[in-house]
Length: 289
Image: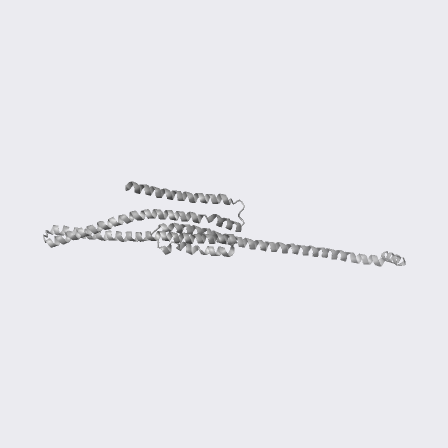
């Protein structure tokens, strides 16, 4: 136990007290520095994690904003596509210009393919396929009407031509009468020419009226066909909207079934009005006949 006595004796010595007095502030300082070091390391780790979270959130926000912009373009493109369907009724529009506006905006569909999930891509592909088939079908219905329309324009030009010619011969006959010209050849030529132009004009007017009545009936049927195409295309809208809202995390509060039923009701109402127009025309035609 002599070593224990030696240690206790040294601890009570002046040397130990002096050493303790000297080391105490340095040990306190070291402890403080070590505590600060540990605190800084912990703070650094928290800052790094927070920074990584902010970067990740910023990346998600950027992707969401890009999706949102492209999806808004898709919505606008869909609107242009439906307008193009209804342009089939305008027979003055060249066939290759009907989807001109849609073609300028259709790139939004390709953009959506790059940044969207499978549901969005599948719904857009299905819509594009349906749009193509509807356009082909409407082109088939529209083509004969364009021929009729062009024939009516040609007949109207012919009517104007024969009317102008008849007016010229009327003026010639009046001049012959005013001059007191009794030459039989002049009178016979003028009167026969006037009669010929009048008959030609009458025939053109009759033919033109027949074609106008026919094209009016066919245009009503074309309008109905366009309405049916529009309704079939609208059936794709709920799936597209749901898929895009899902990608944007906006499904909360979105009643898909209610939205779908409202679109169906709107489409059915349009078709109902279209059928009423056809029935009214048929009744009017039956009464006139």
